[in-house]
Each structure stands twice: as structure tokens, then as C-alpha cells.
Image (cartoon, rainbow, N blue to C red; front, side, top):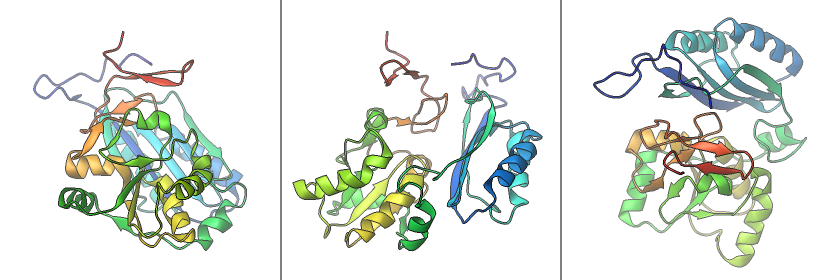
Length: 278
């Protein structure tokens, strides 16, 4: 982890950086062609804004994780808006006192999140969409005692940082194992196709893949939390959530206020280490 930038002074009143780093994350499924050209143009255009982070592009769409000053991320948004395919891209914002990336990378992939393999675009377009459910409605369902399954689609090491009370998960190490894990859960009776199911992940992208696939497998009622866990935290304060949320950048974890917890990641043991651990 890098030391905080000395220019990002903390406000004594609220312990929030006076000039915070703004973190953007989001995605869009949209058909893209000529990926090397998009890659080159996007890297050049975003480099001029000064933002750092990682963008993944594939024939099926774009996955964005960027960070910088307010001026820099505003310029990055303006750049993305110049392409009609990325215009008004919904990007979730959070703040930190460090830039959680060391460089800007634009990478080409078969998928913007691994799930189907090389035929991802064809598979994604062929599937029925799954309706989103607002975070406030999920909270209401929980508090009303509605009989439904909250399915965590994330990897086990992420779940160790935190998850919903009474949620189910599939004990997977990689999202590409999700499909086979669901089949096993159905055989074991852990999941039932006739019971409403609400899927959730960090920012929504994995549920955008998982929820339509579940409908394809015969699940009668499938929803995905709009904007994922991060949006749920902002909308509800993290009600009924236990712990924090793992994120895929140098912040490692954020709490229910979307503030970095100070946790670090052990590359040797593949575990999150709490800031209070010795």
C-alpha cells in the first residue's frame, strides 16, 4: 500500500479528506467492435485527464474503475460521454485519501467479468434480462420477513469481509465457477427454483451476468440489487449487513459509509488483514 498523498489533508471537523480522491466504478453491456482502436483511443484520452485505474473492454461491453481528483474524474466523465456507447454511463462514486491505483490501464478481454468464455457476447445478448430491485425494497423485504433467498454471487474471500445476515453463498473461489456451483446447490436443495431470489455483488456487474442465467435455468423470480452492495450501503446505511465490503483496488475494504477500513491484502495467504490485526 502506498502512503497517503500529503496534499490530501484531513478535515479536523469530520475526519474526511479536505480534497478527497474520488473513486468511480461502473459498467455497461453494449456491443463493441474494433477493440484495439477503442483501447488506444481511450488510453490516450483518459491519460490527458490524469485519472488512474483499470478499464476492461470486450465485445460485450465495458467495466470501469478509475480514481483521481474531482477535476480529473469530471474530465474523465466528459471524455466517456463523447462516445455514444458510453454516454451517461452510471458510475458509482466513493472517496478516499489515496489514489488506489498505480497507473492507468485499458485492457481487452473476452468478457468484462469472466463467466461464459469466448462466446460471452452471444450468450449475454441471448438471455432474458433480470429486473433490478431498489436497495430500499430489499431492506423492506428483510424487515417484513418475506420468504426469499439473498444470494451472494461473490468469491469466498470477499464474503469473509462481510455479507448480509442470513444470506446464502456458493463457496466459490472464482466467479467462473458460479454456474457449476448453482447446479450443485440445486441438487443439494440449498436453492429452489420456485422461491424468489435476490442476487447481489459489489457493484452489480456479476449479478448482471448471474441473474439472467438463473432465469435461463428455470428460476421463477430473480432480482438483482440495483447498483450492488456499494449502492445498498449508500441508500440504506448498510442495514442488515454484517462487516465490511471487499473491493478490488488498493483500498481492499470499505465500510458501510464507503470509507476505506485500512485493511491490507496478503498476497501469500490470499486473505484480507484487518487494520487492527497484529
